[in-house]
Length: 344
Ligand SMILES: Nc1ncnc2c1ncn2[C@@H]1O[C@H](COP(=O)(O)OP(=O)(O)O)[C@@H](O)[C@H]1O
Ligand SMILES: [Mg+2]
Image 1: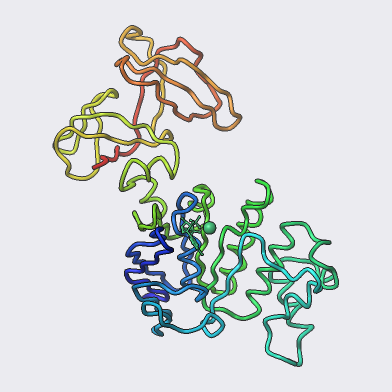
Image 2: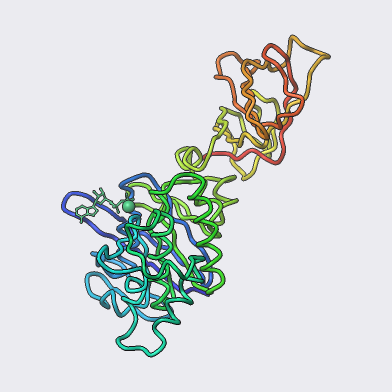
């Protein structure tokens, strides 16, 4: 089942190819996160879905209705798509209630109740209704912007870096609150972010954009464990990258013989996430082992840097529980949970 379908969307601004043949499907009720570095085309993609821009080529359809085909299509206000941007874009001279009611049809009878219901939905106190935007915190303003977008009862909600102006703690609270609100309302959502942690925890589909191209799309776990290339691997988190000889489902590398995914054969590069590696003390053969070079206590999760027996490789950084930490100079045995991923 597909709610939104993007087929080979391309968009150019002068010399800049902002999007190049991007195709993506979004299931009803799902949450998609679009990630990529600044300038990779994320906002352009959302603006094309919303109808603020039109593609040069390609088709956008929603719920079986064609929204855009090349530069022709349905105007934004007829699409039933909500959008919340980075700054929320509230009207400064209107109260919270007036901002929220802005999208309603004229003279609906239960205006006040609907505003109250929407404030409740985004977990804001009803007493806020008479305030002006400047009397609210950044997080509260974003909730009002979300309430205003929800008031139009969209079938699809687009969120363009809506939390990026908030500080870390508030950001996480807001991300969870917004996910909850959208889930309860049964609204399909697409979140744009340059924060991979935010994307991994928000989404059930992750789409990686780079230089206007869709590099990979799929469940977050799959992209984290099996990124298409080195750049995607590093964009989605810390990675241990090692040269290896791969054959028959195993790789010979600086960590020994390691099980790998895929059916690649020959010289290649393998990737492990730091959380796949476990360490145990190695007292039996201290001269042969990997050696701890640095330990950073980090509370629940600590970081240990380990020099490999092959001195031509840089030390690897792994994460481990803060209990029974080794000390620099210890030799350790490394264990691997799961398979390594072979990068093509
Ligand atoms: N209206 C515009 N006019 C000219 N260039 C634009 C316009 N909008 C975006 N671009 C360019 O298109 C590229 C993609 O921009 P954008 O979609 O905003 O990226 P992101 O949201 O990933 O940071 C950038 O190089 C940007 O400068
Ligand atoms: Mg942007």
